[in-house]
Length: 352
Ligand code: IPM
Ligand code: MN
Image (tube, rainbow, N blue to C red; front, side):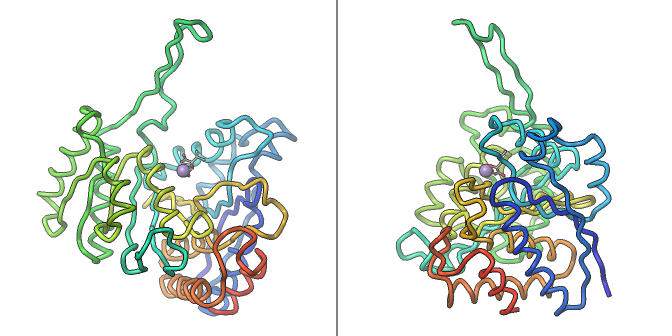
């Protein structure tokens, strides 16, 4: 029997509730497919910070590195100033464990959940490969003359050849492995960000021409990309982009696949510890009410199994989710599903 040690960080708000349902489904899948998942729970998040004044213990990252995968609920607490937990927990984990890819599939499971007119599941099925360790997210920058009328705030976008190249390589390999349309689109802003996206574009074509001639290379500016997400989502296969643009376009991506209730992502270190999470936030107003949609967390669990190489079990979870959203759920929105949070978990587990 194959067994895996999984770290679980429920985190803030509805994070613990949705993670619980993800584990319920993972356990049901494990039983059916002869796997064993051993969980270690960590209480990192806003409540712990407010109680102990410690964001992450120094030992945390070293400890987490011992796991092949982490399942994360949500980070963000209404009583903690924005940025502290996000930078101190989520971004720190992404950076220090070198999870340099943020993989975000955009897949519509049922047309009822799509806000776009006449778009069907076959029209919305693409993947965003978001660079996850650089760009505007490194925290590089600062203030001069802070608090005065002459104040200057600088926030720098860091793009290294090494960081850009490894992200692009991952995207090319992923496109090849996906074998759908063998099309990789670089999403950037070469007309304005003439340094950063010059590096991205040069590297893209250089390694693409040399090593990935089987993959069609395309380019679109980020503003045009958002337009086509709405107008022609069927044009996309795999999209690769920087950290900030990837953050923004994947919220739009989440909406066209049915909303934050269903959108999942993986923070991937192909050779280290990867972390899987629903991409929505901690939803404080729904906390503890048993109304939040746990499907995004369940899909994060599914991505985790897939990443661990348990592709059959992962596929079974996806099939169960598709069946549930097509035949059972009334809506994917919190409180409108026709099921409680825990009932959705039970439903998916029973459909496996
Ligand atoms: C996401 C989130 C995070 C990000 C925040 C919470 C720091 O929006 O995972 O997309 O910007 O990456
Ligand atoms: Mn985001």
